[in-house]
Length: 326
Image 1 (tube, rainbow, N blue to C red):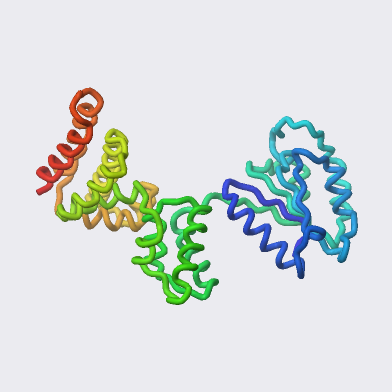
Image 2: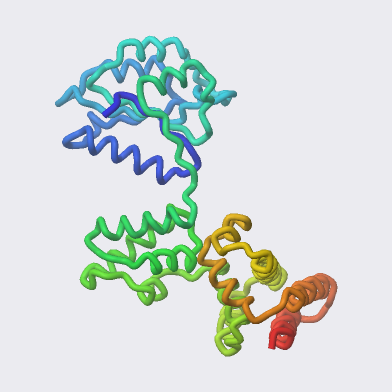
């Protein structure tokens, strides 16, 4: 284990998990004396170094977490505290081998800075970007396995698509699922539908799939649930239009002999969505799908200019789509 770490990035959950992992691996038991956090917006580097040099109450082994280390940025933010980088440089020349120092921040560190180069030489500098859908799915499978339960990869991906939550909120949903399914040992798609909140994006995603699959009763069921949620019709139409554009682009790229994997990369969307779109557009021409986009544009203008009831206009739009794709 190294004596110094710099962890930064937009993925705060990933950063915090890594910090806890380091602390648990280094310290036999964690308490307020051997696991110390210091806010660098309120404390000087001198204070930080003093803590690194000080002995613990019951053990000399300590993990010290310095938060908001803005002095590692290209343009440090203006704060009331002045930081003397020379003091940190001096500490790095003579590290306390019994202390693990973790420097944290959200923004990207300036790798050109001399202090950052030195930190890289002596320790680990690690960036935590926001997880993509695939990484979240993999995390779900591993997390559930760590809890002594099982979940299929397809159901993990369904949870991501169904909720469209960020990593932090996905973790909260997982805790709920683990608590409910503890005795079953397996988390299924049905459990996810029962316990988690279906996202607006998933409803629109489902609506488009049912439309192209000609499952009109299911389409109406999804549409009615959207209306009951009192979502703004103009906003709903924009989401539906976005899905139609994806279907159109997928059809065009398929006609140019792109593979599903290449389409997913070109459109920056998950392969699962490409797979469903591919199935959906199979029986339709590019011209036919283009007509749905023209319809969407026409009804967008109508929604924004007409005095008619907006939900009635949206309902007419759905009926027109059905007629166009029959």
